[in-house]
Length: 75
Image (cartoon, rainbow, N blue to C red):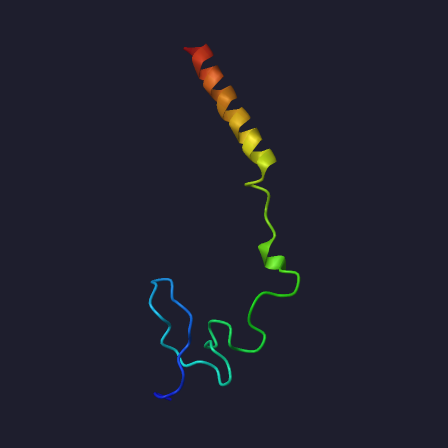
C-alpha cells in the first residue's frame, strides 16, 4: 500500500492528494478514479438557477436605481 502510485489531483489547499490511486488509473477513488464517478452525461448538475443571468443583472440594476431615486425623493 505504501509503495502504490499516488493520486495526481491537487487538494483545495493546493497540496497533492496523498491517497493511493485506483489500480490502473491516475486518480484516487475520491478524485475520479472510481467507476461511476464524475459528472453524468449531459452535465445536468451544471444547470443555472437564473440568478446571475444578464436579464436578472439588468433587473437588479433597475431596482437599485429606483430605490436610490425614491430615497432622494423622500429626502
